[in-house]
Length: 120
Image (cartoon, rainbow, N blue to C red):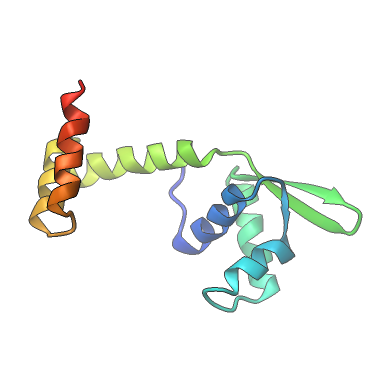
């Protein structure tokens, strides 16, 4: 599975969050909350996502509706695995050490993780 650039991932997150297939207009309205993107640019991103196998387009009247072919959970699982392999030598321990050393994780979160791991 290919890694998505941030701009395409932002669109996929909107599509994954929707309960039903969505139109370009629906996507554009949600993107406007963070930044203005031209409709033609959104259509280009959608075409790329379709070509990569992430989306299927369905024509309804004069509008196209987009729905995911890849589940968000599957994409996240793949990205997590890739990140773990590339940056941390496939070691969850190294990942957690990096998080704790960088002060990105609160002590309470580490305790929560410890309780979670103790269940195994």
